[in-house]
Length: 437
Image (cartoon, rainbow, N blue to C red; front, side, top):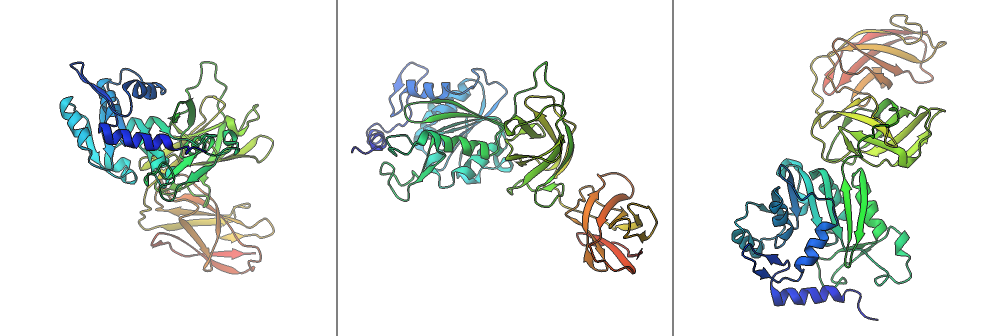
């Protein structure tokens, strides 16, 4: 059986012979003949919905190599940043010959963050993924850098690589420990087409569109936003809550793998998972699941979209292209900074009796706390009864004055006088007496 990676060995020998990986047509009409023909380069970029006029747009070319894609984006009017992990002298030669203004940086893929290089309308990720040991993490980094469209072009496994494995329907990936893929030690992974698409969705893109499977790769357009609502879009669902999936709070850290849980009412439409379109500050992400909680109420969980800036951000929901729901705020990368806090009052949450809890009526108390920071939530605020931390069921949204905090007293709490206190960060409140009857 012939080696299915013979083409890679052939490309490598051609590059040794020609020097150039990309082909170029110079302004005076002369041509440079590289391993990748000018026709093939134009065909690859033509697979993606990249406008001919890119004036006013920022474009990032990751793994630029000789730079053809970067210089093509510049020709279309974009402000371009090109990245590679090594200093390719041929890029600099072509940069000079074209009198280019493309900004070049030698950086590792995993050093690319919005804080370091900014964010881009379009990110080109052409022929890079299979060179990386951590492909899903790389796509998450790409997503965080993208505000609109990422163009992902990657090698994929086909029948000749894994005969009889039914790759057309299986999201599998092959790992190459040394030089199994064409004799090159920088080729690490080979995803099937379904695996590549699943990676792109999981990385945090809203819409993942297979544009084409061409001779040596698959071309996937990854969009950060849902399509805008049509003129006759269905009414908006009602968003009831948005909170951290693990701790029920409203605080999230963008550099961690955090998930948002949303509760919503569907109206007259019975949704499926594919209908659910959550978004944070307009950036959509595909949900992981959908659970019916009652006849009209549903819960869905989704990954926090990569690349969100620090501060308050609004979660909204759409269903199958509907209008967006009412917003619910969450806090991104906001430290919990608190001054002095004070319990101003406490009462039975059912009877409203001050400084008293009637266990015959229930086990819930309402506490009013002043001085809380804006991003106090059910996770970072602590309420103690005789030193035992209580479960919080509600914290009023940010606002002026004391905020209501509802807490549940454990089963078996004795009927007696008890002492209640609150804390957030290093700040501790006064202690108040609560009579439990």
